[in-house]
Amino acid sequence: MATLKERMTDDMKDAMRAKDELKTNVLRMAKSAVKYKEVEPGASALDDAGVMGVLGTMIKQRRDSLEQFKQGGRADLAEKEEKEIAILQSYLPTQLSAEQLSAEVAKAVTESGAKSAKDMGAVMKILTPRLKGQAEGKAISEEVKNQLSKL
Image (cartoon, rainbow, N blue to C red; front, top):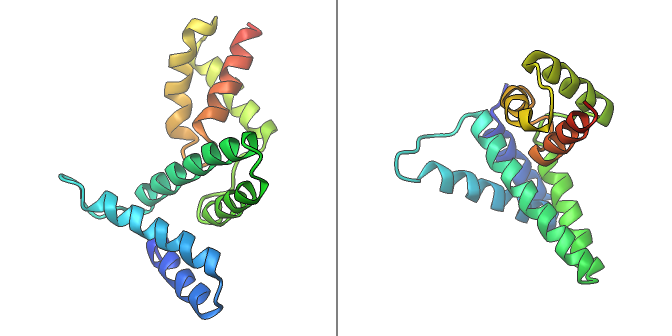
């Protein structure tokens, strides 16, 4: 099975052949971000998990931009950001639904023995590695806060 980087390269070539400018540009940016991460001092070639981390960062940046564009009344730019997010997310594992996330958080709260909002760190310590790539950190922390506030 091809690695994530190889899949991105193949998809970029296909997008170039199909003259899909948006997808070509997004994949070029993604490959560039991965390469940049690999050439940082002390870094080495990224495996699929490392590439997913870079893609997750890119998605988070685009979500922040999306909010800014919506607040600024720039629907055209907001729509472009949404399309870029969709392209990037296609390389990540499927995201957990709200119900699945809630169930995972409830399980982690039970495992950690959390009693109040002060125990959020212990719950996050369990969930972050378990849900890496399957849910955004912001969504996880909001669900943890929500469930701990009910205790």
